[in-house]
Image 1 (tube, helix red, strand yellow):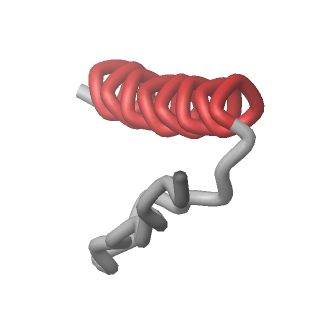
Image 2: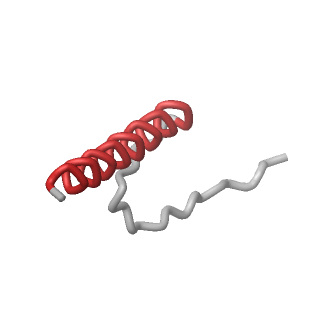
Length: 51
């Protein structure tokens, strides 16, 4: 019984670490700063070409 709880908690922490690693790696590739709890939607403002 106790072994299964240890295994489940270990799997839970491995998932957390995997998600954090993937999110950090994606931020490096996209050069962005995001967190797991980021709820803000960012709207990018573009300017029209002046000809």
